[in-house]
Length: 411
Image (cartoon, rainbow, N blue to C red):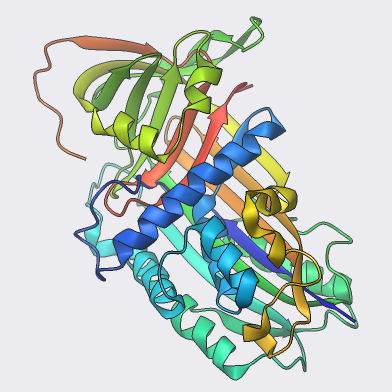
């Protein structure tokens, strides 16, 4: 009987920058290679999931790190395809070491500024393995994940009580995401054939460096893609921000207090959303942020709260990872056999953007086996996010994209 591998990754808000930025502040000469690969995968995945329609929020960092834990046990064609799709361009040990270095750097509080007038910045990352009690996982595989991913093994009774195991894992997910993802794994996803679940959680709670004052929020018109209009609460501020203008688009960057995290927003011109989004890839995004300069910006921005659940199994297969999904996969590095395979990949993400800052979360289940602005700007840019826009939450030092998405309807 083939055994199913279940891998769960979750994330709770963060911000990060594109891979074209240098990573000189981080340890490990291979870290820039990891960031470049992760960023390429982020845009590949975004292009694949846009076919779902509607608002969108995903956490490519969470998916990359969780799949890296599965990749650590892959071999043969499965390993090759995962490496190609995920843009893992480092040896296995070097890749996992680089993930550990990146995770440590993202969490290093000594790089965060102190601003007593703003709420503290909170970022957490956690990994966990849930394995069938008594199953013969290779000690070297478990040691590899414990050493590089800080992922300990929790013995679980999938065979005798799959529903209880599901509730236990969902409870861990909920705890790690401050209850923003309370029910990641739906009923029926975990079965008695499940042997392993890999979990990754990322949590962020961040205040804006320049808050939107609540008394300056009032209803305004938002123009939807179909030409209709809705009235929504729009926040307002006048601040010195990084800004860029290109063909058919504008860009603005909002920093978070006490951190290197930023939210980068791309506002396509009216009628140009599809054109801008279709051309939005890693190179294009790098060009966009590379042209941003300090400017005085009068910004109007909607409050928005998004939640998106996606089954990305077929998307990953279409992207070229079909050997890892379904019978025939080779995860022999986990147990010394060819019994494990990925059966489904389910992703859910959440983000809440308000006057004080941002809170967001994401979870994925693989089931189956800036520079200072000028003090006296010459002009003031009026920028109203009153139509669909794209956003990226990114770390301005490492180049890691943690969350990205689009707002088509903020209501």
